[in-house]
Image (cartoon, rainbow, N blue to C red; front, top):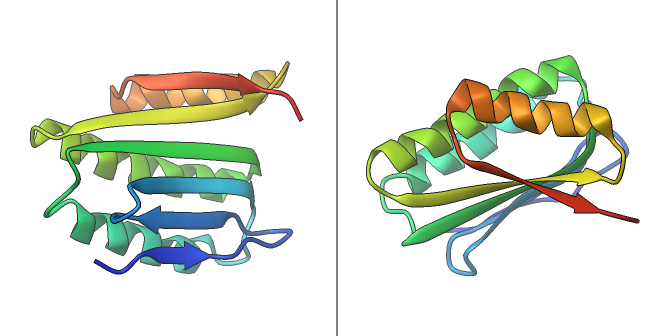
Length: 126
C-alpha cells in the first residue's frame, strides 16, 4: 500500500500515513479553506488501510491548532480508527498537547469520550 504524505503549510497540517514504516501522524495547524477536500484523501487511505491493517496501529495527532470544521473531520478519522479496533485490531491513539494548553487537552478528552477510544494524552514542550 502506497504511503500518503502531505507537506504541511501555514493553514494545513503535515500528514504521514505509511503502513510499511508503521507510522501514522497528523501534525501542525489545520484550518484549510476546504477542509473536506483536504481530508478526503486521508479518510480514503484509512478506509483502504482498514482492510488489512498492521498488527498494531499507533496514530499520532500532534496538532497545535485546528478550527471547528477540522474538528468534525478529525472525529471522522477517529471513528475510522475505532472501526478498526472494533474489528479486532489493536490500535492506540496518542494526542499531543503543549504544556498548559487546556483547549488541546480538553479536545483530546472529548474525542476519547465521543469515540470510546483509549486516547493517550501526551504532554510536550517546545
